Length: 444
Image: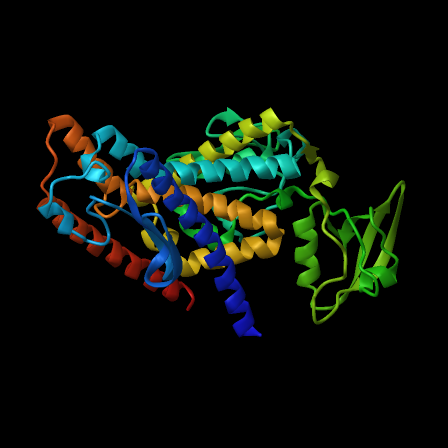
């Protein structure tokens, strides 16, 4: 069974990666063809070549290594290190014979297409699913478990969060937007015991974010039951959907997380639940299942705690898709900036193929296709940002050479480009080994 789960994880990850690689290389391919450049190969995956066909001048193929892809354009020093063309005069259909501005477009087209893909995904999900939001004005407080990560950061139970970084917000999700949590000086404005105060969060909190979680709407959920599973202790005791548990064994209960914490720590001991049903209040004796440590009650939905489902029109969905793309991009860049500045740990926050595959699988398990496409959009933006970094062998490295050529009116020597390509490959290979080793060490 474990083998099946591993294969499923790999399959989901490879599926997402192949979509990203195909779109990225398609950008290079279409731009090159548009400017009359000859494309010798369009490969999804790295060699060896597994399958493909030739149409016109181009070999369309799939490689055996599904960790990337490439478009081989005639007259360009690229990953193939093919330099035979350097001994001949440039042909009109070669990359090197085209104006600098055309070559810049070809080099950046892959990054642009990845950004466009993310925009289309975000827009499509908004058109299809609408927007589910939780207004901050509907959240009167949050529950902070004793000894939790959030308590370490300075939050307390019943804090009403009203803003972040000195600005008020409309929706709860704005409190944990990517650009917000990766900002250098993060602080939340809360109302505590009738007084407004700041909770300052150090940048190092990102080191623990993946394993310990952060602000989540569930912290504000009341102890109201959405449904009762048949045959469970709750159903046998007489609990019903809509009941609110207000006390357990003389302990006042206001939040869902507080309720589940008490139940799971009871070790199957019978407890007295005080229930509010409409205008009546009564007590039921219930013991959690000793194996599952649950009583069989369903978590409230976001709508039950003041959440609102908004169906946006086409134009509004486009605007929302654009906003999500910009917001996610800002957050990823902010995260990289925190790592490069040393504010947060590179080891804790930089993930490789294993970590990405795990996250993609988790998102798909939790939210189905919606989760899959959300992660795909996130990875598409990440791929775009990584590729535009000024490292030889990446699109950003080629772009640097073109900018230099455009400024000084002289192209760097081909020998220099080849040396730079080799250095870039060593850097990328070293980085790949590091992230894979890092992923493995996190598993143990």
